[in-house]
Length: 308
Image (cartoon, rainbow, N blue to C red; front, side, top):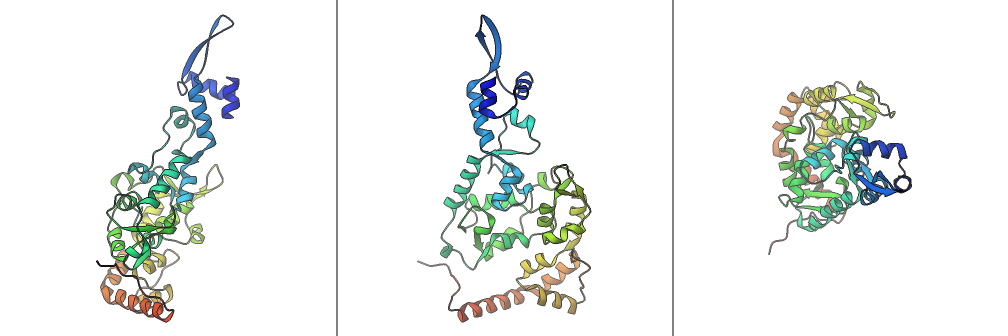
């Protein structure tokens, strides 16, 4: 048992309690003419390796630049595998991963991607995500579309900040919905960062949401409150990503059409989205012409798909 303590860094009494609870296998050995219960050497070595390379769901989400709830969606979509060993499940409240699982997932993102030149009018995935509102974003389905080859993408890294897709595919992404299992978050609260991501809200404004500190010192926002705001309001950041308009002229146009921002959470969702929908393709064409003009002025040219 002392060697297991040395290898894993866990207290001897903690390991002994885990063995008695069945979270670690028991091996019987003969010492000093007595039969004594002890731990399985191979399992102890596995546990030591896991503890050295453990990644929490929060840490993994940081590496991917995704909200923590997205990690659970990726697990549900069978794109990530959690460590489900009894000892790990008994001692950690949230999903846990081995660092090799992140490395495997990151490699798949890089290996499955296409050259940037193969995309038509590429846009960053994180900007596409910002144009999706009303609730949890369907990250599991988004990455399934990418990694299973249904949507062409280019990637310079594993995080969403490094992934690009064609503008036409971005429109299809916005029509995806989170699986029913993920319409409600696991647990009753969201972290401030996750709440900001769901609402497409700058993190500095999350202080306006009601919440309280957790045992770890971070603030948690009631999911019920976040869901209500997501369904009833639309933020300036989401509208800007959706229309391609800069925030200043966008807000000015909305005001000319009788829509005034209420507070940091933006406008009534349904009425404003109905108005924006009437702007139609003329607004997008105007944005595209402006962008092409800027590219030519700087000596760049928009990418087009090569034809044989």
